[in-house]
Image 1 (cartoon, helix red, strand yellow):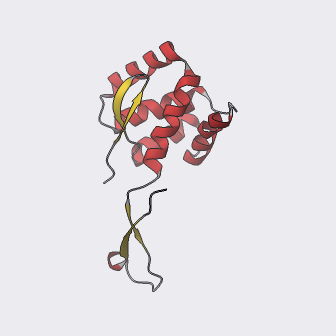
Image 2 (cartoon, one colour; image 1 turned 120 degrees about the vertical axis):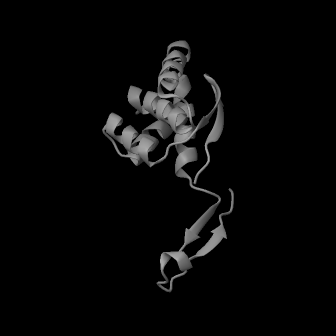
Image 3 (cartoon, rainbow, N blue to C red; image 1 turned 60 degrees about the vertical axis):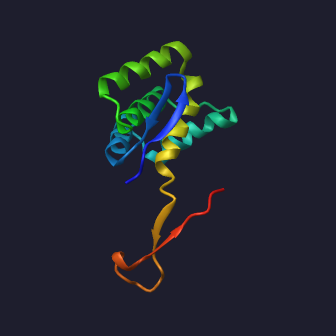
Length: 129
């Protein structure tokens, strides 16, 4: 199972994780696929602002919940950070939190091309860039 990733952001240092449940809730809240949300958040790196309020706020809030924070506290912390620092300052945090959840583990199972069942597939370590 994927472990939460600690991010130091405007709200402090906290663990973030988007599991399947949080990703589905994010998609529903933003009425977009995870890839579309990620792409919009990434646009902030090149000076474009294609993301919406929920892209930023829900990505952060749900990432905090997935990281183990109480939902009420996650909502309070997210809204407080938005109020104090603004959405533009938090868009990179949302992007980093989502990226950390989507990139996968250092070890992944890959098919070896011979059609073997899932439990007979090889494991290899991915190279870090």
